[in-house]
Length: 491
Image 1 (cartoon, rainbow, N blue to C red):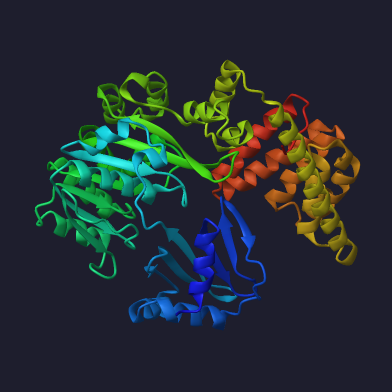
Image 2 (cartoon, rainbow, N blue to C red):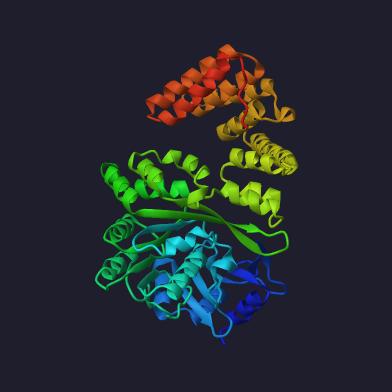
């Protein structure tokens, strides 16, 4: 039995999701979203991790790890679970992360999937996207959707994955699961081949590149149902992400194609349950006539407004779902707030639902305290550097910046900030725009706004000469503050 099996069996027994092995650290495991060391395990070496990997990786995966410095595959312990394996190299040597793939494919009910997702599974054609950050459960959601189709339709399903995670047993459907780097060389190649294999439904594990994305859209356009994943924080940005992948000259064409083929976007994030464990929160965009028009007319920024009023079509926003879970006591109000993308919207939803925002005040104060301590530490470091090297312009600017712009009054000292910034400018002979910009901030804190404006104008001119328009624009906004006799605060 491979040595790593002992750690994996223990991980599954503890209801963990991931095992992390890194050189110079003991093994870590993630349980209900929290990463913690495995008790009683020694510190690992790069050599010991490589030995673990050699026991479970194929020869091809080992060769890929050596040549390309990372590799992906799946590993199975019979009767325990399958695992998604990523082996990699970092500055300390070899490392790996193994994620548990449950043996039993979860149902719609197990995952609390929105009812509208059943209708996505029954579509005859179109593109359905599941999106969310890494580790949010996208693969599990897609597995549940494929299993639902497998139980309720007579179709030919082709999945293209890297690696294959959930293994589907054919029920009503004919199922072919292909793994990139084992059964095919790439997502794009397998997707092109799928069109010659009489598919009804195609699942693409990830739209990694422009070619794969283009073929996926074309596949949906030619009368097939396509499921795929992206990495975006919400449903609306997934649409823009797909369009932005293409050259500007083709984006209008892609907008038109997506308006016709995209049927739905499911965004998800994982939250910690109050009673233990984790639960997904889902945002659902249903592409109705109004949404299709916004996509075609390059008005995707208006999609969230449509979602707010699209409940009858099965749409829901993260704010809606997170508030609902908090009201029911499934997750804490604080976790719901932290997971929300639109903070203003969820605050409104909280007030309407009678949920307290007291935790926000406490969290903001804690954040301010943390930021103050971080700024204090940076200031002490800069001053320590200057005691050893009084002509260190980087340290001069760092100290002057904190003293001149800190949001914390007890760290500000305009007089000293000006002295430090002037020394930095003298050392750079007034040719360093960064030092001049810092001097402007310091002069404003000291109350000399005319001099602040002069220093900032000189910095803007130098940034403009060096073709750095973004920095020049940022200083222009700061300049407007100084003209109103207001100091700058680095919030």
